[in-house]
Amino acid sequence: MADPFQFCSSAKLVELTGRRARTVPELAEGIRALDDAVLFHHTHHFLLQHQYWLPEPTSDFAWWVAEILQERALGEDLASINTVEFRSIHELKERILAVIAAHAGDRTRTVEAPSGLEFHFLRTHSYVFPTDHRASTLAEFAGHLEKVSLQSIYHHVFEARLRLSRATNDFAWWFRDSLGEKELAVSVEHLDPYVFTLEDLRARILQLVKRRL
Amino acid sequence: MATLADYEAAAGKDAVHEIAAIAARLKGLRVVNVNSTAVGGGVAEILIRMVPLLQELGVDARWEVIKGDAAFYETTKAMHNALHGVEVPFTDRMREAFLDTTGRNAALVNLDADVVVIHDPQPAGLVNGRAAKGGRWIWRCHIDLSRPSAPFWDFLRPFVERHDAAVFSAPQFTQALSVPQYMIPPSIDPLSEKNRELPDEEVRATLERFHIDPERPIVTQISRFDRLKDPLGVIEAFLRVRKRFHCQLVLAGGSATDDPEGSQVLEEVKARAGADPDIHVLALPSDANREINALQRGSTILVQKSLREGFGLTVTEAMWKGKPVVAGAVGGIPLQVRHRMTGLLVHSVDGAARALSQLLANPTVGQKMGAQGREHVRNNFLLTRHVKDYLLLFHAVMHGTSGVVQL
Image (cartoon, rainbow over the protein chains, first blue to last red):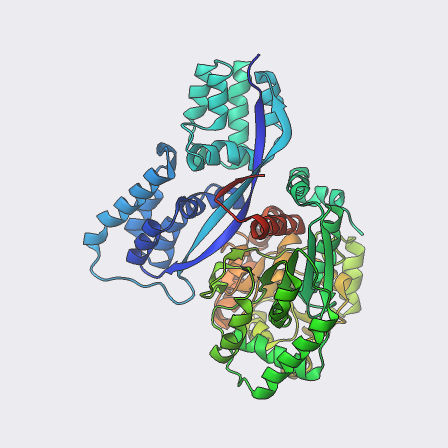
C-alpha cells in the first residue's frame, strides 16, 4: 500500500522588515542582506493575492524597477527570470542579483523613487497545517484535488519546492515515490506553475491525473 | 449574531475551515482588545464582529473601551491629525490630558490577559502598566503613520516600543521601531448591515428619500466629514464633470464619538455645495449603516479622494458592492485599488475629474472593474481573512516566528 498523500495548507503572516529601498543599488543591498523568507514573499505573494488574474507582476522587484523607477530594461530582465528553473530560493536570489549587476554599467545616474513609493521589504511567515484531505490512490487524489483550497495547492506546488527546498513539488514527488507514476510526475513537473492562475493550475494538474486514470 | 459558518457563502468554505484549523491551536487563549470608542469608525466596526467570532473559535476574547473627557478627545484628535503629518503644536496641556486619562483608565480597564491588543494611539499609554499585568502586548496602528509630526511621534513612540509587536495596515505606514512589525490590512464584514445584499426596492427607496434621482448617474463619497477626506476637492471634481455629464454627487458621512472637528468640516462642505440641487450633503447618524449600504449600492461610481488615509474601508465596501472606485493613491488604498483593474487611482482634483469622466463615459468598463474589485475583496479583505491574521499574530507573539511553522 502506498504512503498516503496528506494535503496540507498554509496561512501567511506578513512581517514588515522596516527596510526600504529608494534606488536600484539599495534594492540590491536589501536583497543581498535579507533572508530567504523576504525573497520568497516578493516573488510569490501575488500568486495568492490575485488568484483570478494572470500572475503579474512576476516579482515585486521587476514591477517596482519598471513602474516606479522607470528602468524598463532592467524591469523586463527581472520579469523574465523564470522562477520555475530554480531549485532553491538562494539560487533565485543569486540570479536576481546577477541581473541587477549586469545593468549597473548601463546606469549613468541613480534614479530615486519618489517619496512614498519606496520599495518596502516584507517577510512571509508560513503556518502549515494538515487538512481533512488524504489520498491513498490516484483516484482518491483526483477527488481531493478537486476540492482542496487554493492555499493548499499553493503550498504543495510553490512552497514545498522552493521554500522547503524539496527537489520538486509535492504532487510530483508522491506520484513518483509512492505510486511509481514516473511519467505522470514528469508531466506535472513540466508545467510552469508561474504562468497559471491557481484555479487553472488545479484544472491542469487534474487533467493530467485524469488522463492517467 | 453571525457564526463562522454564516461566512461560508461570502468567503468560501475553505477560508472558514482553515480558520478553524488554526484556531484549534489557540483554544483558551485570553485576549483583550482595547480602543477608544464603542461606536463609529473602522476599529469599532471590526471589533464588534471579530470578538464574537474569536470567542466561537475558542479564544477567550474581550473588548474594553477607554473613557476620556473633552480635553482628552481634543488631544487625541490633534494627535490623529499630527500623526498624519498636519503640523499641530503639542502642548503641555495635551501631554497632561493624555497621561491623566491613561492613568484613570489603567485603574478601570481589565487588562488581565495572555495577549493585550491596543488599538491606535488613544490607549497606547496603558502599556506603562504591563509589568503588573503580564501578557504579550500588541500595538495595532490603524492610521497612516508615514509622515508623523515629530513632537507627537516622539511622545508616542516610547509607548509603542514597550509593546512586543506593532501592526500596521500597509508597508508604507512603518516607522523605525525596536519591536517586530507585522502587516495586517483591516477588513469588512460581508454580513453586516453595511455590506449585506439589499433588495433593489430598498436601494431605490433610500435614494428617493434623500431626493437623489435613481435614473441619473450618481457619484458618491461616503466618509466622516474630515478635511483629510477632501470633500471640497470632490465637489470641485464633480463640478467639472457635471459640465458634460448630467450626474449627481452625494457626500454622506457620520461621526465618531472621538471626532470633535466633524461638525466644522460639515458646515464648510454645506457652504460650498450651496443650493446646488445635484449635490446632496447628508449628515447621517453614526449607526446609519443600512442607509450607507443602500447609497453605495445605488451609486454609479464610488469615490474616496482621501489626502491621507489609514486603510480606507469605504473603498473595500465599495468594491464589495461591485462598484468602480475613484480613490486617492494614499495610505492603504493602493493595496485595494489596482489601477485600471479594480478602480482608478488619482492624485489630484484634475485626476479625479478625469477618472470620473472616463467611468461615466464607459459604464461597461466600470462594471468590469466593479466585478473584479468584488473578487479582490473576497480573496483579501473580508473579516474571515482578518480573523485568520489575528490568530497567526497571537501565535507569533506567544511562540515566536521562524519562517515556516508547522502547526
